[in-house]
Length: 232
Image (cartoon, rainbow, N blue to C red):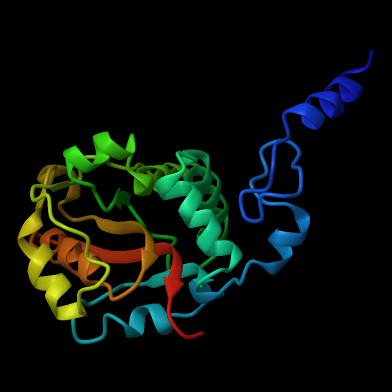
């Protein structure tokens, strides 16, 4: 009995399904089927110094560079992938998407001089409830293909707050500004830091994190997310 035959038999009874549509079977380490992969709405922002991502932080934070990999819309494949990553325990989604994005970022002149990667942290209580921080896995994936170190404790979340989903940008920023502290100051001094999160909405959390990081002497900040919400 061949190995391929056994693989097909296993997939018949225990299908490895696409995490975007939940229907089509996958092979190997893929997380999306061919059909869904073709529909993923790439932004190309990593090739633009100014774009919709950087525009959201204009007058708020000085970014060396900023980009999101995909456009996020209600019901699209990207939303399904993010849902699997955050709420269904599929941490490998973050690892794979981060690694894929890292391959693109190292081809961009705007991200080549990154020194260290820092994920937006969860509060320890929330991380224990979820089982992991999704941004950690994105950072790990980026680290693998960009060949840059990532620091889980580069930032620490000290305040356990309620959901930010229904708050305005200003309300989010005021609520989270005092929620973070730098955890490894010496490791960040003089570094160009890549701050990482899953989705950019208003940018209040990323802004608050960047504000804390930029208090460390001689630091520069860039940001990436897997997705950006809002009108294309």
